[in-house]
Length: 327
Figure 1 (cartoon, rainbow, N blue to C red):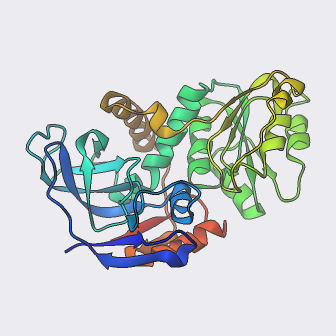
Figure 2 (cartoon, rainbow, N blue to C red):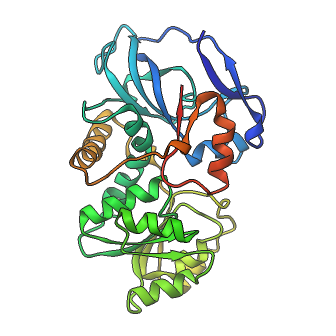
Figure 3 (cartoon, rainbow, N blue to C red):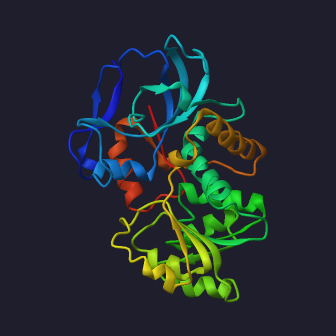
């Protein structure tokens, strides 16, 4: 029997437990993947804590991993046993030695990309793809604000922006994180613990502000994000690391310049196999070319059974870039 991480109740990292489980036979369009590397994403903490509603308890955790196809259902056509694959899906359960995935969520991995690179970049890279290429198509020479620029999504966004010829202003929480974001291609950084974000954005843009803000922090940065936008600018709120934005007065959008706000998600933009193939091909091409480098520090690679410690470090905001669980 394979092992997995599960939780029987919502709470802190301590609710995560390591246990054996029975893997059912795959249905006709399902695939059994033996996971080789598992991506850790901040959204995983939302499900564990109860911020996002979970399925029935006990529940598995995790949405992304890379591995090898072990077996397939009778009607599977996208992959075959032995294929190297990566997946990201809305259903939880990737924190496991083996996982059942619908074939429409799988993408074959190019030989040039390792399991660790794939698991560290797939969901985060697809997130950057839909944000910068679909929600607001960023163009060369454009300046924009991206919060948490030294996080897993942020460091990929810095590199993608540089590849597009755009100027990413990134918020960070320390001098070390500022250095990481600048090294990755950020145009400038703002230490959100020491500087006034909106005032610094105005300085960096000669008073012009920015046409779009990408905000995964939520409650703490909501007002500063709105104050950083040009007239008729777009606020893209795609996460809640500091807590959800609640009780929004729509009138404030008028007062601050007829602003637009959207609350997108990956699976609202990449929902079909064709959309998944197109977005992942763009991501893989940038990784293969070296425009996006995916490197996970050894101290951010955890044994799968140590998922609780991985969550503690992620939530302490001491990590940079991506972290992995290794079965």
